[in-house]
Amino acid sequence: MMLGFSRFPLGEMQTVKLFINENSSLNKVYNVKFLWNDWFIDKGFGGVHADKEEAEKAVQALIKLYAPDKSEEIRNIFFGNVNKTISTSRFIIEYTYERGPAIDERMIIVTEKPCCSMADENQNNNSTTSKTESNKNYDQQDYAELGEFVKIFMINEQEPSNVYDWRIGTEANDLPIKWISNGIESEELVNKKTVYFRKARAKIKVNGVPITELLDIPKPIEWDIKLYSKWDWDKSPERVEIQPDDKCFSVGSSGCSFDVVSALNKAGIKTSFLCEYSPYIGNGIKIYLINATGKKDAISNREHEFGQWR
Image (cartoon, rainbow, N blue to C red; front, side):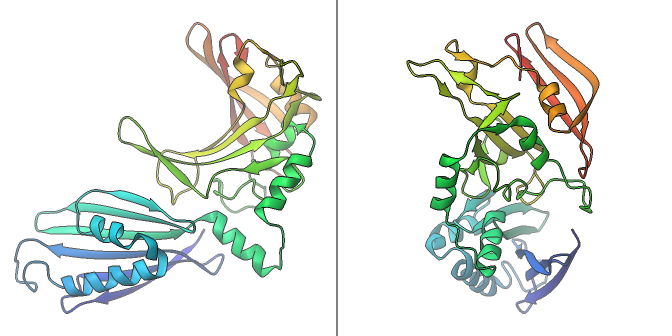
């Protein structure tokens, strides 16, 4: 991705700045950044809180454009000193605060969610498929092989970048996959770190057989797919997780012990064992290099838990 930008300084002391960053390879806006260098000590540059009026006007303009229903919340965080991320139906709004020797750097970054960008593109292409129709198609589709799902999350060989995009896997209309996240979602961990993710459900079988929950009437178990990042939401997801629903690891299930390598090989994915890590008895990870025609090489790991590889 190639980025270009335009900068617009505001205010008499030009402490308020608006940056419009472009993804030049797609000829689209990548994000909008609004920065106020808020002087809390008078150093002769317009006094304390120079250009505050312009900063307030700029914040109000951003709110009107991107989050009119969150006006009070955004105003409160912008003049506060706590980092926070706000999500709307179309945008991620991230506020960061950093105190320097004499300046409080207050920044808002607005980025459109990947799901919304794609929705706009589909609308421009006269696409009439709604989310309800998509879910209906999912309900009617049969289970598909694990290897086919792995391939759609491998980066295409012709792609210039070697990193994932948050939109990867969203164009797999021929596979039974249903995205359940509203764009990119976030979760704060116990250690106060924030992780970002997208989730989907999928109907997956391994070597022709779906995993089954043993009820009065046996029921095939769906799988969970998760794009995950513990860094920044506006960067690429660092990994893709594909694993059966937790019901798979209960007593009342059948088919949880399966040969992943053979399943990938049948889909035309070659595997090369690299190493194994077992921190303690009963748990471990096997690392593989995987490759397929038309795809870039990728690293895959299988987790071993409670005597089963998954």
